[in-house]
Amino acid sequence: MSIFEIIMLTCFGFAWPISIHKSWTSKSTGGKSPVFSYVIIIGYLSGMTHKWLNSRDLVMVLYAINMAMVTVDLMLYYRNKRLEDAAKAAKGLETVHTNG
Image (cartoon, rainbow, N blue to C red; front, top):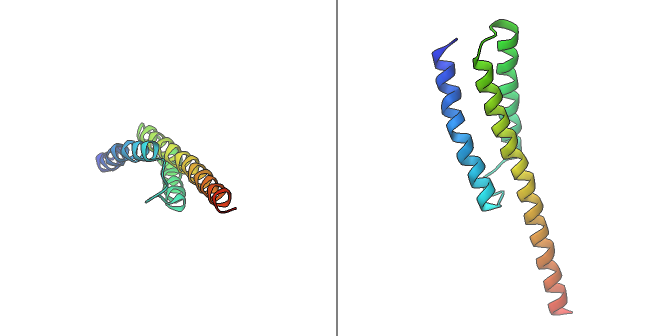
């Protein structure tokens, strides 16, 4: 096991809950990029694949936990996108009823 890999994954692991909390409470997609999340997931999958093929150890658990958190944040992005789209549609209907 590499201590530096563990430190990196642990630091990222502390960042994702903050991002998830922000996504959950803000109900906004502002500052979020689904492409970025997919790239991060691919990176974690690559790290897990490397571990699986070359040095199976418990660091794989950190990759899996981090990947799960990014996936949750990505799902919240799509939830928030639906909420924003519904709010825009409702606002559009209000405008039509007010003007018509």
